Amino acid sequence: MRKVRPGDVIDDFQSQLADLDSYFQRVVGVLTGTHNEKSDVSTLAEQTMVTLATALEGFLSDLFLAYLNSNSTKFQESYENSVRQSIQSKYGIWHADRLTYSTVRHIKLSDLQLLIDPTGWNVTFKEAQMLKTRAAEWLIQVHRNRVNSLSIDDDRVIDTVKVIRDFIAHRSRGAKDRMNTGLEAIDQGPPNQNLGRGDNEIQHVGPFLKAVFGTR
Image (cartoon, rainbow, N blue to C red; front, side, top):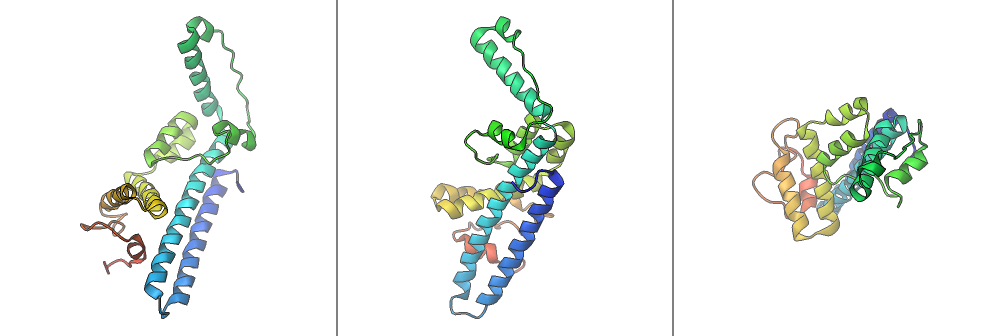
């Protein structure tokens, strides 16, 4: 993780998106007029979406770590409660009441990463709602409010990016169904207008991803 402050993590992600957009436009320009332009741009659109989805996952993980690096009191409180409940469930309340849990004022980023996942993976969220659930468990109010400020339209974008990425990666019938469900739900008008699939299911995602608004 290159940045530890939330604002820097956000700036870094925005820079990644701008660079990715510039890359896509440059390569499209190179491919324009070539023999395999249509199929190559479709492939490029799929590859760009996978890169975008990977960047989004990394951003959300880095942002949570930055929030926790800033203040981990709620995070430690959540784990203290879990430990107490576990002891009470297994040994009884008498033992749980005698547990001493010492909080740490500032946990190093490297230690936080191990506490969240000892195997060293990113903090991942299956869907946007899990993002908010985890924020409620781990983050202090000011940071939790930022996560909760995501609208339902924002949630749909996050979830749809993930299911498109999953279909590109797996190509299974189930992944295609989930992608089409997401693309059916995402467009409820502004601000997500033109991001959905309309009435027809998407069979080949590359041509859909490269489509220009108003031409589908």
